Length: 462
Image 1 (cartoon, rainbow, N blue to C red):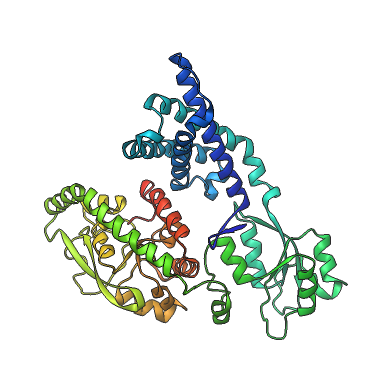
Image 2: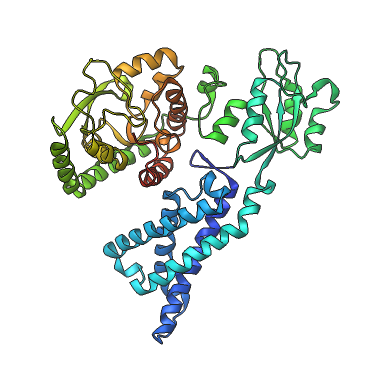
C-alpha cells in the first residue's frame, strides 16, 4: 500500500485510478475530434485544449471516487462496476454542467461532451474487463509471514481469505504459544535461520501476532529480518492499515501513545477545515432553503407536532450541545422518557420521516451547528449523553472519539451501515478512532466525496 497524506491506498486502486484518468483524457479527445470531423472543423493541436481535457477528466474521476467505483465490490465484480460506472457518468455530467456554468472557457461544448461521455463509459468498462484478473490476482498482493499461531494469527488468516484482501500469508511461525490454533504453522525451533526463511519465501513483510509479548519478542530474529529489507509490523498497525480501523481487540494503550497519529501540529489544516465548514455551511443552507421549506411543510402535514426538534448530543471534549433536525419520528417516540436507538423499519418513523432519513434531508439543519462551530462537516457522529455514558463503561477508548469535533458525515458513516447495538457501536468506534488518529484534509475530502455514494444507495439510513 501507498500512504498518501496519512491514509493508505492499495497499489491496485492507485494504478486503476491512474489508468482511468488516462482513459478519460483519451475519451475527451476522441469526443472532441469526432464532433469536429462531423462539422468539418479543422483539428487544432492537442495542446490548445488541455484545460478542457483536464476539466473533463478531473470531473469524471471525482465522480468515480464519489460513487465508490474503487471499493472492494466494484473491483471484484464487473456487473457491480458497470452499474456504478453508469451512475458515475451521470454524476460526472452534472459536475461538468456546474463547471460549464462557473468557467465555460475551460469546458467543451455540450455536443462534444455527449460523445466524450459515451467514449468514457465504454473505455472505463473495457479497462475493467482487461485489468480485472490482474488487479484482483496475486500480482498486487503483498506476501507476509505471521509470527504467531494463536487466535491473533487466526484473525489474520480469516482476513486474508476475505474478498479483496491486499495480502497473502505465505507462512506461519509458531512461537511456543500455549493456545495454538494454526495447524500448518512451523515451530520456531524447526527453523535454523528465521531471516533466511523469510527471504526464501519471498515475503515483503513480517507481522507480529504474538499472544503474549512480555519477554517473548524474538528481538535478534526481528533485527536480522529488518536488515534484509523486509518490513516488520505489529498486528495492530497491520490491521489499521488493511482495514481502515483501529482494532480494539489487539490495540493497547502503549500502541496508541507511541504510534504515529493524533498529531497536535494541525494549525494550518484546522484553519482550513474551519474555513471550509463556514463557507460550505453558508452555501448549503442558502442552496437548500427551498428544499427545507418544502420538507418542513411535508412534515407538518404528515403528522402532528413541531417541524424541527433539538436533541442533546455530546461534542468536542465531551461538552454537550443541542443538534437541530427535521422531525422524522412521532412526537411520542420516547414517551417513556428513555433514550432508544433507532431500529430497522422503526415503527416510530413517520411516512415523510422515512423519506427524509433515506435522503439525509432531515440532517440539513445541522449545517447551522457547523456554521456556529459546534460541529464540522466531517467527524464522528455525536451521540446522546445517555448512550455515551453506557458506551464509555462497555467500550475501551470510547472517550477518545470526543477529542475531535463531531460531524454530519464521517469515516464510520461511509464504511459501516447504521447500527443500533453495542457491537455496532464498537465497530463504528474503530472507524472513529482511525479518523481521529489519521485526520488530514485529504481524508476529509475522500469522506465528503464518498458520502454521495451513501446518499445514492441509502447506505446506513434508518
